[in-house]
Image (cartoon, rainbow, N blue to C red; front, side, top):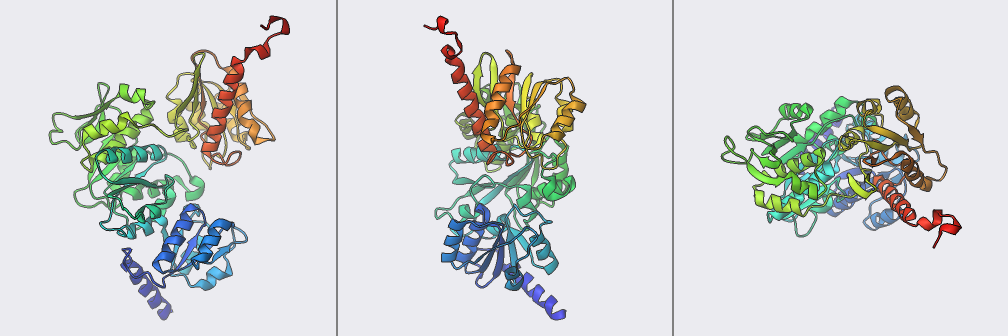
Length: 512
């Protein structure tokens, strides 16, 4: 027992020394959980460093397995989610690096904890390796229940406008390990980081960080709201310059107050009201900075106007908040207000984020498929007065009833998709009994959105908005939220095109 403890202490000491690409990683035995984009990038990186790597995957990926075979990295596919393969037990792992898809209660991670094997995520590994091509980049962390991708992209766009070499990375789709291995290198990485990834970070020291908002989400992964909230709060730990928080969400301020930050780090609030000193906000229709400004006691720096955001399709309250949060991150790097203004004027939000698909007959058709939880759907619903709401899918353990109750008066009708609809239907019956609810039941998932559009057309009238804001994940009927949004947009446009071909609906004697 003493020998085992001594061995564990020696390994802990060795891991503590692995803080650079140029540290001695040779021979370190690392088990990598997952063979998706993240897991593959981890295994590829560790193989390049000379570590001994074993990948444990939940399913085969022939292309990636073939590449890893060339790199000398074996892959073991667990026969079931409860299986801990014998190859892993006998591997003698010094370290586990896990993909974000593996929750803490997963049998593989329970095995690692019980075996005393340290667990890192890809973000922790990337932070330690960030000096591969010279001076380590500054990291800006972006997290929150909603708005992460837009804020990450906006911040990177603003920083690039200031002439700084920057890349958006992380959960945004570019693995952060790929960014740190880029041969040209970057001065700054704006890292979109999920609660899953934050759960397994330990030494990351961000230049600045933001938690945009906190609401119930991913409770099935974390086990409780408290665990989810605490994981988000890890973004603020060890922050050097600015902890950016949401003035409209007291939970984010509490996370800042609880965080162990570095000396000199400031709390910077953002919101859509007139800002106090050290905050970002809106004054007479102008977005302003009263935080990074020498005369912030008496004046503010202008960044952009609400009219300009409206022209970019970004005037909804939650998008204004994203712009302000991104500007706070950029200003922490001394990007000028003029550069931020210029970046805002040529920024276009991502598809499927409150995206106007069609404006016809005074009816708006809006794709907010990226609203995959109740908090995002709430922000989207608040943007419109009279809504035919398209919702449903995988609810991820979240109670949707409060959302329906809060918006019952603005919901003209509801169209419910998804394979399991009972919870949503019961919530409407209890909290919005006067709202017409249409249930989409199809055997062929390709027919979902055409049916949605056909039913919506029967409900709408002038001044209404048909809003796809599902408040749920998409994988029960679609490949992804983007696939769901694309199919909605296609169905809307096809229906509009059919509507212009009026001859098809006219009796023969009335046709030209």
